[in-house]
Length: 457
Image 1 (cartoon, rainbow, N blue to C red):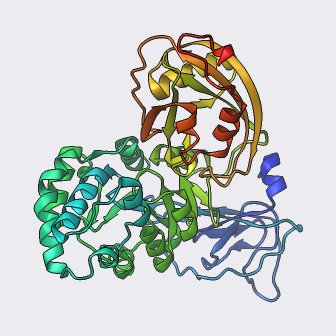
Image 2 (tube, helix red, strand yellow):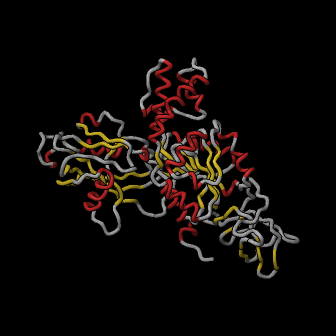
Image 3 (tube, one colour):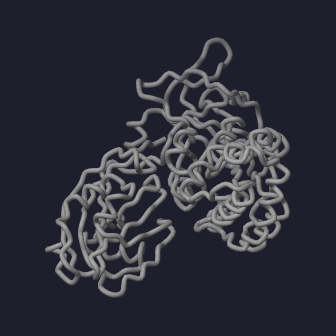
């Protein structure tokens, strides 16, 4: 088998899946091996007499099983492999995906937040800002409410919540990339399941409105503690743990995956932020389901085990552009994005091959804010290497600019950002800023009266 340079540098790759092995000169071996090595090293099996190390090739055994993998026992611990001195990379082939619903496939955060504040009002306690709610809401949800209204019985609390949520759920919509990812799963013949706290009555309405229910083989609804259900799902549907991942947006989802012995993928489209998800220790963190799809396609439907972030598929830094955009009143545009730990920053993005940096800046600002800009001036370049504020391990070269709105400052955010504000520089510095944005703003002179050129800001 021919290996790429990247594979040679990584060392041997092994895949957890039952296979049938054939030796070139010894005939067929019994189907007992759990590890498949994708290039030469010691093979973890025994033949008659002492262990042998012949040339080998592996093939899937499909006899009588259609396109399903051969079922045989898989150990939870792996034998030690002899290597050439480099670390072995484990990959799991994904054939089954268990989804969370809220914050993973649909956006119900505004409705849940509104209904929760209704509960707080009825209980006589102050309402909770959205940022605080996202930071503190947890599952099982009784733990969250016990922290603030322990004097309210659970039955009364649920009556208040459901009485209000029934109306608020009109705002629930499918998240960007959700339908496309489910179509991708169908095309790849992946089995898809749902494990959620959402009651059956709400799910029945939301699945019709979003059109996502048809893609799910079996939903498990109204489960307050998912950890108590995960083993039942695996057993009832005969799912191999090493071929199954749980995709969710909360720490509880990651804990559930670990409890079930399956892979975990955290998405930044829901309730918990980057820091909370990192603390739970998922195998993978992605910005959204669209990124997960790209990773699966790129890696041949496998995910690297024991990684906290999506690994870059390149050997060089990523060049990006970003700008502090000012309006005619001298205010700067600040946006808040989940991928930067919900900190405030400036709009921008990647420079594409064959694109000038200024053209990339105009394109990215238009895509993210719908603003056309003028009077573009370069300010500084920054190295951003392994920033803990960003949701994955990255090496950025940041080209930072300053510019002005070319017309009325009517911002329309795309799915990457969740909030924007027009602020004076003094007001902007009071926000929780990501570090690169703070460095850029500190490099800008104090703003001049409205109408002056950006070079004299």
